[in-house]
Image (tube, rainbow, N blue to C red; front, side):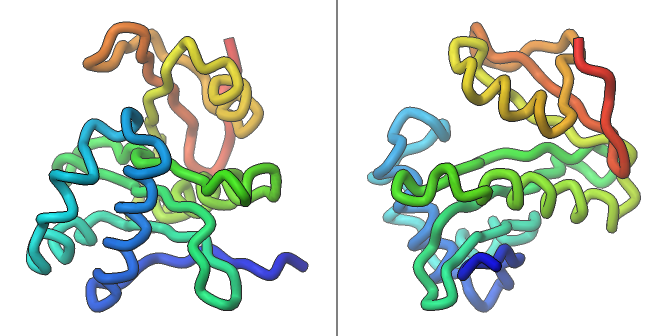
Length: 162
């Protein structure tokens, strides 16, 4: 049994989310389309607003954050997308990324979604292989950045990988 768990961060825990998000930005400064300098200046209302989408955090029993993922939905009728996926370097290889993705897919199921999207950089073969292993497949759509393509997975099942 792992000494960590994944849970959704509540709006009143915005400080915890802030700490995790800032750690993500320091750990992987080019990965999230933002910067530590920008987000460290956000006020409480901004942090609470960001928790309007499900933010999932993996933490040890003592509260040490190990990873995070957000299930972002741009509009009520939009397909939910897993964004801001992160696992702390010291915690990689422990199944945390798997647990975060599965928790995000479960959140999508709770709101009636049929599929979940995510974007992955094609020059990151480890990430591509990881998402394929969890049942995601490329759907032919491209992201806003060159070399970034979209993957999809059915909620409650897996799609055929191609």
